[in-house]
Image 1 (spheres, helix red, strand yellow):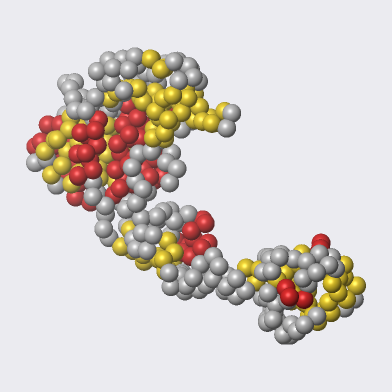
Image 2 (cartoon, helix red, strand yellow; image 1 turned 90 degrees about the vertical axis):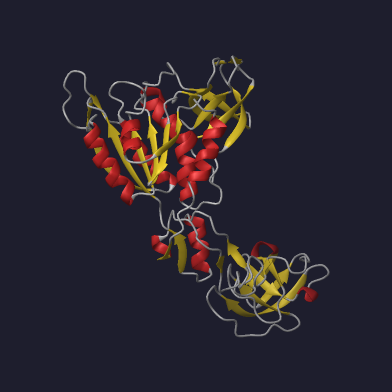
Length: 402
């Protein structure tokens, strides 16, 4: 049974990023990770533009008291100004429209009185007010987005705005996933006495995709060495990582360790000082293999603690590490024993701070019911017996902020 930090170091050394690039158009790049930094081809804004509806003018014309100007043009967004402003003139202008030559300031429409071609500016504006200068937000040719960033809506919008319409991204890591257990049946199938629904595969497939992986579901494999060897051998040949649930402990039907050894794989990790999830298995040789326990809480806690950051690292994310923070606990939390204890629950806002609220009911490794809506895991270190209500507790975010 290895300490958690030693297991983490092992996975860090084994799980190197997948270094295969793909070039994609923007509409196919959502959720993908940039393989190289991006440089834009346009300034933002592309011209000196108005930041609001109002009147473009020369600041030197309105430096004292109310001032009357002559209206010479109206400029809508998307049109090119036709008149050069000279002394005593102004132009009606709308948000996003190009500033006419000669103008350097915009006065909001609420601060003027307009009648026909006469416009009275009621109070002197600050020079340059409400003007967005060309390149104020971004200068073309300079770094825009860094490699290792996951592309979401705002990033895609920015790339479109600077005409970077195709991007280099890392290939998604290929994750093969299966469950093992003679008692398991697929969701929707009738249950005989003693059978249970395989809920792990559906949950883990969803979490793998959220982490940036591409999932191949291999279904349920019976507790038979020959069947396990066939499925694992095929999976290792086509996946960057193989993940399974069940069959990794020390029971009579836990065949996966011996099957992996027979396939020529070494097992640097078989047991970790964590609760729940002690039987974690890591194997390497031809490929990389992670075996999780079959109990749902054990499987999900281990996924959030070890597998999620590993997949994010394989995907090429710059910020892949597990994310921890210190918050106050609403309730008393009980620990103790030789293993680091993880208790699932939710982070909720309270008095402009975050508070950890443990899930109701028992923290049993087989209790799938109160795992729903988990957003954080409270971490009680080895030897820590109790966290009192209101005290600070370190929590692991199950949904990374980046």
